[in-house]
Length: 271
Image (cartoon, rainbow, N blue to C red):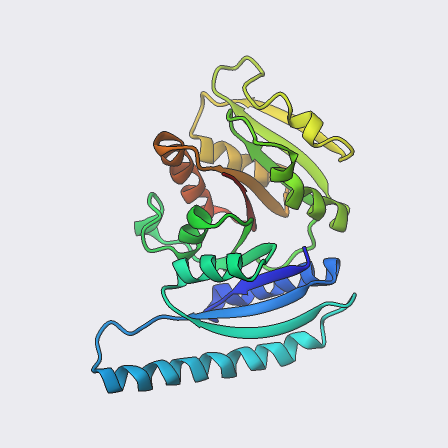
């Protein structure tokens, strides 16, 4: 992970994301980019619109420069930092810029919203997760920074395209020396259901499987319980985009987790 983007609007949630971005950059000796999307105001005359956008951009750059100065002294292992503002809707713009500039990871802050827990509507983080081809680390506003010592990988019954999908997770495990617990909610109770190639994909990584009956409670509730029981520092899930029904399943489950997860959520892309 040589290029890490922290997408930020400098709300409280963004501050948490910056702390994790710094830790990751130090582990990998990465370039850490603070990126703020400047969205066009909904109503303004042509002249006023230019002035407003200019002021917003200047304020964003000023704030990011302050954060850059604070963060620079914390960087080690050859890590560096830069700042950028980009114009456009945050969800679409962040995705576009991350792809165009060849970033390896997007880090974002998240805030829970009662009205939005069931849907992606109104959530920049969820919009990025749905549309990005890159892994996304969503950091809850209430999650204080913790070193990553234990990770829960929650898997469903869909096949995985190959070991490359899990590569960002493998890199994290090695960089932090973290423990991996692979959790699967088994709907049928037969102890099976996940991709049989998964142990092969995790070859060389110390891990253990935990399969629980998924008959009691929802999928998201089971995942949350596993995170709490194992005192995980990070949850990892795989987002499959394989047609309409695949998106329905993943949108529902990942959406609930994004808004309710007490620890950072790493979403890997299987597209």
